[in-house]
Length: 317
Ligand code: AKB
View 1 (cartoon, helix red, strand yellow):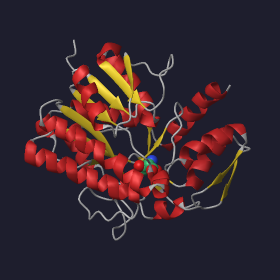
View 2 (cartoon, rainbow, N blue to C red; view 1 turned 45 degrees about the horizontal axis):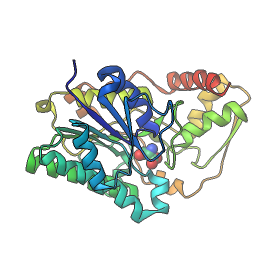
View 3 (tube, helix red, strand yellow; view 1 turned 60 degrees about the vertical axis):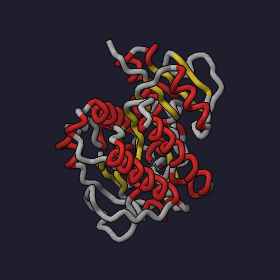
View 4 (cartoon, rainbow, N blue to C red; view 1 turned 45 degrees about the vertical axis):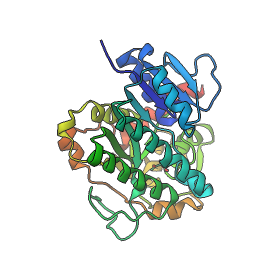
């Protein structure tokens, strides 16, 4: 039986809801504590416990860690790229400071393992767009990218200096049908499915030939659990692992959707998020994750599109 006691921050978000369910399946509901800003209501999460908590409240978070004797934290609470541009100082505070609080608690021996999501937003200008490697120069031009790059450096610092076991993935855009994303640049690749089913048309805020790396949520959750289960000595990256997933443009995604919904039409009207997308890679080299902890994927663009449409048809009725 498990000895892990897990706290998830941002448990009601896009990754959080699905990761919480998987962690409950593996460790049992009594060992999983979900947390978020919402008031508790029945069925909110499958976790055995729920703490309504602002992750920036350092003292409260510490108390929760002590009360439940938490060993492992999945710290997912974060502001995404689009929203961060609108609230830069708040984004910096939320995306960096609570991570430091958890690293400090690990340094003190209160917790033993942390997962923290970084993003392809750490990449920026001055590097090739295709097959971007792990160790290229990071030159993010967005608030979100700056916060994630700094977080990565803090993770590496706490590992190097204090041996803190903090693990991280540079997620590409995440696509799922269960919980909508919010405030990201890659979110068009989720919205498009809802509108394709409900309106048979979609106006994309990203231009037709802009490719970005994307990952289906099932693969994202598998990768996260795999990284967290890997022996510590196998890990060679202590900032954050590159993850490529698949890479496609709005035009290519629309063509896949048209195979399932022939009436579907896409149009384009770029907004401020186009500039963010232009600063990000089109595809990512994730060979180090494949070597270190056996990263692999089940879903390509066709499998993902079919699965999204099948499940959203049921969900939307
Ligand atoms: C966003 O678009 O902000 C996120 C990300 C790539 O980290 N999905």
